[in-house]
Image 1 (tube, helix red, strand yellow):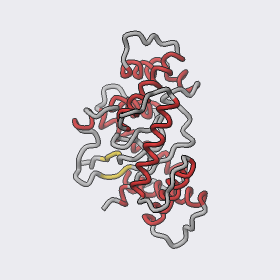
Image 2: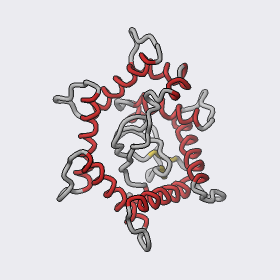
Image 3: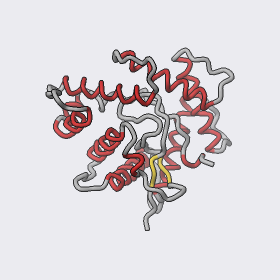
Image 4: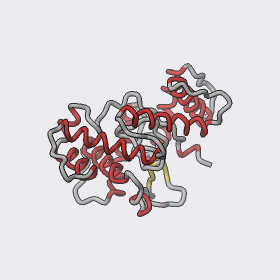
Length: 254
């Protein structure tokens, strides 16, 4: 029986087509085998705030990859999207795919991406274990982001700093959108940011928003205004060039 894949839960430090920590994220190089053999998407996941968005994002990526979505269970579709993205990334990186499992390719793609980023950041590569190098790259990226936000990294553990950066980014974006942040946790703010962006996109596309909720509008955007929204780089097709993923690859899990 084919083993299920799962989408590693990553901490994403910006919003857009990516998803916040705790939500499934389809990201080439960040996919692995579930240690317990659990499915990627279970009933508990479906009840989480923002799940509608993850479902829509999986469908969007399926469309981008030319994968048929009609009548497919979301988990099946997510697996197909993940496999296609991994293979596409492997091809782009000139990684041989024949005879390799998706997990093996994911590991190679992830390491290749880490190598590229390490070179960009001026981090020494030679003779380093992939896990050690990945950790150095993630830490360097996090400190760079913290510095840009005016957050002091000195003396802070990775997880502590990562949380602080994430919270600051979420609050900054909420404030830019005119959302009141007082007394709200990050999950609530993320949900409100997504809602505000969905309504903004709908209005720019000339969609009647009266008596419609964010789920309905989001579905309408990707179903009836896909190309236009993409052309205008409206949510959820915003420019992703500055996005930074700070989750650890599955091979680093203990």
